[in-house]
Length: 474
Image (cartoon, rainbow, N blue to C red; front, side, top):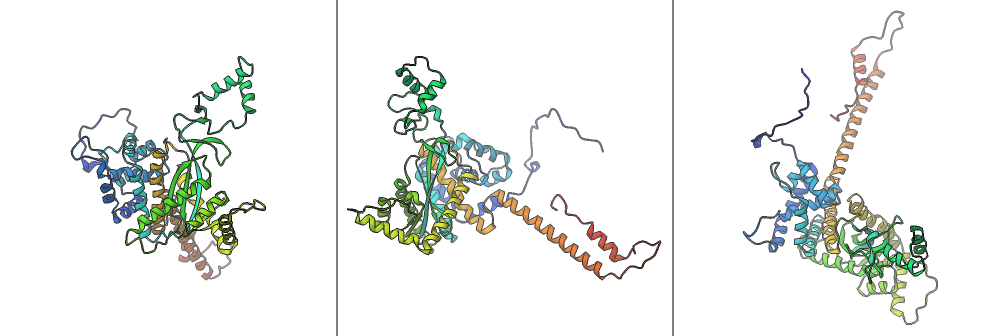
């Protein structure tokens, strides 16, 4: 047989029959996602909610709204952070084409189409999709809502610190330092001079004085790894019984936890009331009664406010020494009641579980889900993407319970490990069978010029010992 050689130049085919196009089976994971969404009527819900954005017969047809939301689901499942990356991945994968409903001969949505659709739809429409996924969780028995764990994390903004300007004068950072050097008598300052002047200034990164003109919603803050960067603050309220994210809010990064927890809890209550409107989802839901947080959320006003809302708090209390409660009777009662609950057995158990359940949602959404750094600007745009992204995480909880895996990569690795375990089990069984046959063989006779007896049992043992698992997994 002659060796085939690569073609340096290929002439384009004028016509290609659809029967000649390659066909591959769809990805098992995305087939299950499609079946789950179809079971609960996702397409009908989205088209009904988005009908008001379009006019009949006017203009060029856009991409279907269902395709837009499914494409953002792909961003979580595949760990893609940007809409441009999502568009490239969808165009390159036959399985994702089938998931979005595109044939091989059809062009998939461009990243500009995804961006245009996002700008067209409001935050409330994206929130309805998030609430729909919560209804799916409730119908599948994965939502309780009685005890919520609240925590926040920082998302790196799509803006650079070198671009910040003064709020009052609009000067850049280097221009501002040059003015300070000139005021101190240095006419032509060097970089070392500017660095020395900047080192001695107090509060040189204050958000009250500086802003980024490209993303005014971003705030200067310190990240968990110690870097100072422009960032946003995402806050989750997580169901402590199932791990589902009941609400997600986006806040300025310089706002403290005690200032944002009320908005997140109120959002969680609204979402649960929306879910409870469905008869099938109402059966296992419970009203929010308990809030579990870390000590960053502890303050007299926060504990009193949650207590007056009818919520039992389990908030770790920092060591503040002896307190003065003069004129603060209600705050004292709320803080002491929270202290008693935290020191109890249930309080300690809930606080340990909070560190596991809430941090797990951050790891899935922002580390493996690749949303730690945002590629959008403005809280409204980022929140739209965030709602659908976290909704996909909630959807993965259903898939993890039914299939054992919540992402395509996990599904692939799980199947690979299962196949390896099956091969190891078969090889071990054959080896045990060979050992059993060997132990049942009669003792060999001692002859000077003879070799091992070629009995059928001996041949079978050699065959068993020579069996090796195939590298292809077959």
